Length: 285
Image (cartoon, rainbow, N blue to C red; front, top):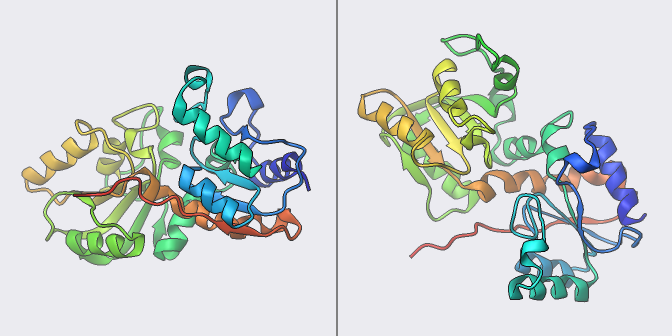
């Protein structure tokens, strides 16, 4: 099976129909006609991931996020940059193809990033439908968007501190940013992986959801400090039962790529696939 044949099969399985010119899901490196021998699934094709792929005999990497440092993976701006040139040489020397699997993965029949999150943290049975909050359904043009915005869970009652420790252990994190009273009670949780907590085009959307769905705690990826964190912080200062945990983009989304290995099996005709953990991008002093 060639790289392009595998790409076409993956797109078909997602059920998403996105024109090529409207998606970032493009081949970022390599030959589309190359035979695929082994697949590596990762959040991002960093230099270390590429080196590990080569060491494991992987010749096709499926990455969720950019290879070339911007959302569109454009290279015009970076074509003479030493970092780009050295990374490009590393990929070419290893004869690895890199394909980005982002848009189709999120907007297909099932958002497989959230599926992976649920599996990794054992929350499959905790998911509840949007619109069950005490403040009811959205009543404006946000109706459809809010129904598909992030995921909401009802978990066994715990504290914000205990929930933080749970994610630190399960996700292998040294530090998790927290907003709110560590002793507050937690039951209704919203998860906004990756950039979802920025609002996906409307920065107030996470706060709208938190109010309407009566959310105790938001678990998120990226943040803008003056939006959702400020809202949660002010709510906590006012004595409201509101909190927030910030896992970061990578630690909130990597799990979708971990379980992509299983998702791929029906379309790969026995081609082996492995998970290549990109790892948390930060160290802490």
